[in-house]
Each structure stands twice: as structure tokens, then as C-alpha cells.
Length: 295
Ligand SMILES: Nc1ncnc2c1ncn2[C@@H]1O[C@H](COP(=O)(O)OP(=O)(O)O)[C@@H](O)[C@H]1O
Ligand SMILES: [Mg+2]
Image 1 (cartoon, protein in one colour):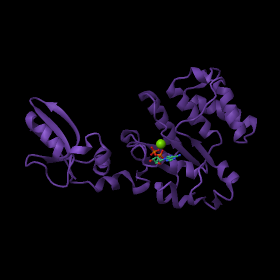
Image 2: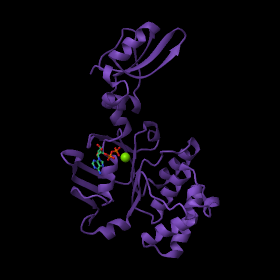
Image 3: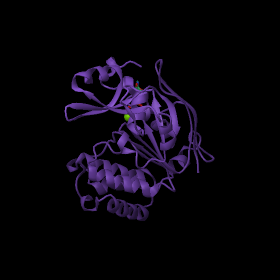
Image 4: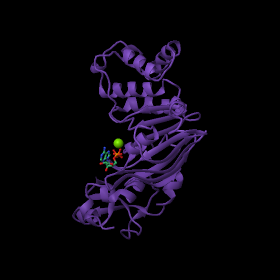
């Protein structure tokens, strides 16, 4: 099973929202990581055929453009902002989505039962959508995306608004699908995906600038992550001179975690990198303390 994206481009006026994307995805969890505005939603909408752009999308032999209905029968999609029907109950909404997806009613009733149990929503089925919390709505969104047992599951910022417990439920659910489903999920939150993604696609200004397994990507910055304790009065200087991932106070000093090609201070110790470090390495200019960074 393969989802093949070739030469995908989408322009708004003169600006590329998606640029030259060529990627092949197999079953597993693929995390699309990028800052806000980097093109994640646009790419996902192109894959789902909700936007027209250049390039092609194939699921095995099925061409998304010319065989859309067949393609869509393999697809589950949860949009970043899904329009819901406030006066429907959860059950009515899911039944409605099942009809849109052309599913037969016995099958969809079974799926609704099974998925709402898995996501801890079975006692909410008769509640109106407008009474649900953000996290519960998101769970309903995930359920509707899974009704047709999709081979391709596209989830746009699925963990936005989930509380820690809901994140765990979500992670377990996704992990349970991952051997048989091509899951593409977007996020701008690094910690969401560290433990579940098989590979990571880093998107910047519409392009996939990196694609690889977690460990492979981290090798890129091996030897470039440092920790050092500096006196309080020097903290601002370090902040302005280096890419500081995090800092915290220890006794009367400040411990800083720094991403730098060179040892920032003779006392700085090299530490093993994580995804936050990698992200900062590539997105330093988009961090809030941007203006003071020297690259
Ligand atoms: N309908 C649109 N018209 C014009 N520009 C758009 C439109 N949709 C998205 N964009 C632009 O495309 C870029 C990518 O947006 P988006 O795909 O929403 O990014 P992300 O999901 O990563 O936050 C942004 O610069 C955004 O402003
Ligand atoms: Mg988005």
C-alpha cells in the first residue's frame, strides 16, 4: 500500500503555499511538522481533493483526480476546523457523516458503537454537539474520519485542544491503526508526535525540507546541542547570541540548552538532541525571540 504524491504545487497569487512536494507514504504514522502558515493544511486538502493544485496523488493504482470516488472510499479526513451541526446529537452527526460516505446503515451503526467506545464517547452519543467541549468535538471528528475504516487517514492538527488524558487516548488509538493504515497527521507541537511517529516530514514555506525517521533526523544535529550554566548577568547575552531551546534557574545561575554548530562556552557540555532542538535549528527565525538571533 502506497500513497504517492508527485510534483505537488499550490500557488496563491505569486506565493507558493505548497511547493514541489514529492513524497511516498506507506502504512505507519507520518507526522507533518511545521510552523503555522508552512502549508500543512493546504497540502492535506490537496491530497483529499478538496483543493485543486498541480501534480498528482495516487493510492496504489488509483488516481485521485480521475477516480475520485474510489479514492475517497479509502480516505478518512479530519479537517483542522470541522464544521459541525450544533443541533445534531453526536449520534445524528455521525450517522449523517456515514450517509455522506455512502456506508450501509448496519455497518455504520457498528462502527459508531465501536469507535465511540474506543474514544470514550459512548455516553455522549445522545448529547447535542453544541454542548461538547473542544476536546470531545475533536474526538467526534476523529470518529467520523474512521467510520469507513480508511486505508489513508489524514488528520489536521488532531491534538489541538485535547487535554493530557485525551492525548493519551488519541495516541493509543492511532498507534493501534498504524500497521494497516497510512496515517498523515499534522501538528506544530513537537511533543505530540515524538513518541508515536514512524517518520517525520518537516515542512517549511510549502516545501518538505526533511523526511526521515526520528533517529535519522536527530543525527543531523548530533554534536550541536549543548547545556551550560551561566551567571544571571550573562543570560541575556547568550539569549541574543545563540539559539536557546530552553533555560531555567539553578541556584544563582541559569542553565541553558543551546543549539549551535560550535561549542558556545568552554564549559558547555554536549547533550543528546531531541526534536525540539531540531525544530529550533530549522525554525529559529520563526521563534518569538527571532530578531536577536544571529545565524
Ligand atoms: N485561501 C487562501 N488564500 C490565500 N492564501 C492562503 C489561503 N489558504 C492558505 N493560504 C496561505 O498559504 C500558506 C499556508 O497555509 P496553511 O496551509 O494554512 O498552513 P498551516 O496549515 O501549516 O498553518 C499561508 O501563508 C497562508 O496564508
Ligand atoms: Mg493548518
